[in-house]
Amino acid sequence: MSMGTNFGSGSERYRVMGEINVTPMVDIMLVLLIIFMVAAPLMNQGVEINLPDATANPLSSDEDPLIISVRSDGSTYIEKHQMTIDEVTAKVTAIKTNKPHLLVYLRGDSKTDYGTIMKVMAHLQQAGIVQVGLVTEPSS
Image 1 (cartoon, rainbow, N blue to C red):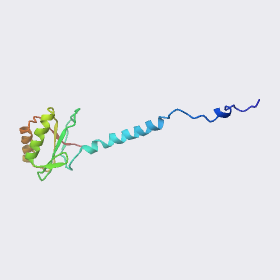
Image 2: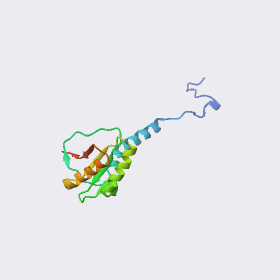
Image 3: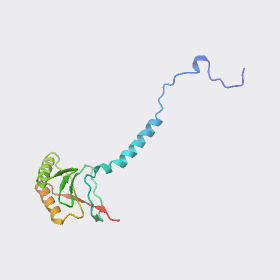
């Protein structure tokens, strides 16, 4: 009898392993999850606007809001699509009929005059939106 370890004989030595190692798959899924968690907030911003600074608590919601942006030149956007103020009113009215609890966030450039923002808010009220969230940058 030999002193070495018995690793099996003949056909038992090279068996096919019928198990799947899930550890690498879990590692890849966790990396992808982290990437999407970091990238998701960056994809929702829309048009480039210099937001004013304010100290306010952030709003929390389970639904995705409709984001309307107003640039310093007075042009209005829904998400990334430029529209006239009348087109914004019509579009928001159509969306409101399908989603009665629609959340609307208004992003106004810090150089946009107050009258333009109020005009957009008046048109949103005509479309049936009674509460509008104003988006600002947190003050440092």
